[in-house]
Amino acid sequence: MSLRDVVRRAAGTLIHRGWSAIRSAGTITPLNPAGYRFRRLGEGTCLVFPVGAIFGEEWIEIGEHTLVGERVSISAGMNPGLDLGPRPIVRIGDGCSIGRGGHIVGHQSIDIGNDVFTGPYVYITDQNHVYDDPEIPIGRQWPRNSPVTIGPGSWIGTGAIILPGTRLGRQTVVAGGAVVRGEFPSHCVLAGVPARVIRTFAPGEDGLLPHPGPALLTNTTTSV
Image (cartoon, rainbow, N blue to C red; front, side, top):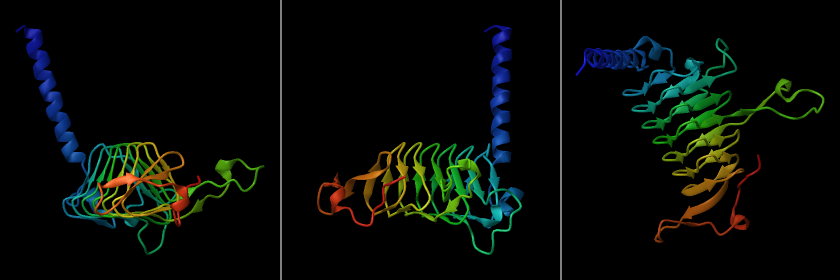
């Protein structure tokens, strides 16, 4: 092995060890000062370094043994420093796994149940712009809020978008890239833009079955 190879290997080892030390030091847990800012950060929970944009921690609750991947942004309110009242805005349950690069943007109420897993780059928000006045740029019109609930045990696929007013039942699967808005039952699979129920769970049958069609859906909104 040449001297150049030895130096390169030694440099690579130092870089990787240094990066591991930086990640360990930069990860947010209940035991370090960054964790104290949260309304609640449960035992065994961590936000992996590098973290995304995090603000409004006083209105963010995260349960126990939840893993928040790198570059995940979680916010409560429009911008830092706002007084959002006495109640939490963003709640993430116990045993969840939030995939890297995701965004959870709360203004009124986002409630994510226990044991919810999301793939990378999932976007969840309870606020959207309106289109009330065709003469005013859409981005300058005052947005509207509508609470979001994701039932326990659910799985949200890569790149899915959960829009304001969405209520997902227990153990719901959202396919990658789906755009979801409305109320959906437990134990179903959603896919598409806009998202629709494509499979449902039938006890005693072979698990998830194709859905018979939109005519049999009840209390379900699929418009975006």
